[in-house]
Image (cartoon, rainbow, N blue to C red):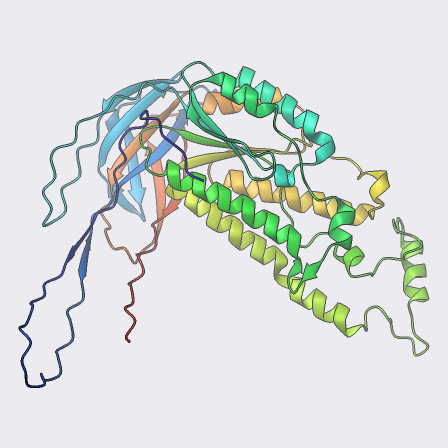
Length: 443
């Protein structure tokens, strides 16, 4: 799914590749020609892109400082001080371009006409991701109320926004200023999350519940597409509001593998657990369930489920940092208590499932400089903070002094020389991997 920019976003600075390839055409000779020399490979010259970083600066009382000068900022990448080439100040959603970025030098061998700057009158840029594949159906009304509150308390006149869903709600609103489009999308939101019994009784692959991983991959792929489209936007704070119940690649493992007492599905205390163990023992004193080769093999296969989830979340947050997008995650469940009594899920396993799903949302937010709104019911307070962080900030830009493409991960540090000033910023970004060489098949 691609987003239409509607002509409002500024032209992004892109990495240009210049390839030179020289070849000569030989006239065929009647006699067999000698073996040809190896053809020269194309050479690529990489032009470093403008690196931008959103910086929020507050005083010791927590108030935004709007009057900082360029000389009061220092940016270090991998410990090397960088030259600030652009600086934009946004106060109350109003943009002041204090220092515009110079145009990048043209690639060798290509002469381009000078680009004409385009004016962008948008206030802020919001992208709302409704992960309905991970939203409970019985919480549909709660999720719709949350978005009505977002429309009223967060999205203001002049803000550009888009909204996309991951599942059957089929929401895909391109970037627009029209809030009626948001109201129409809210009416379509419907949760479609798997119930615990669906997970326990559903099919499992070598790595665990196959449907659980498939749904998570759909959600991550959708967000990655959104981040790729946002990467070309500069000099704006790009906020992605991520509404989801979170992720767990290995939920309710004991129940799925039949290690719970079927006559006591809750197994609420140690007594019932010990009774379960005694009932499953063989005559030789070994545990029949634990000695089941299939169970042991499956548990071993699912050992790295949490590591797999951490890896995929890491890839997602690195893409967000590359695009300079701040992600704010919201768990619409609010304060999560006991599970649905009709589901008959062991309380300990339910609590573990909730903890892992909330931690996944924390990782997404914290690794991109955002805020995780989890395990709380005061959404208005959280929306006010998001509103403030997207209304008052600086955007600093520089061309990296380290053009080595092999050093993909770059550590960033921003310092403010004014006393009693504290800065919040993204601490790293990762370059895109180099393009894979195209292989020619020989017949």
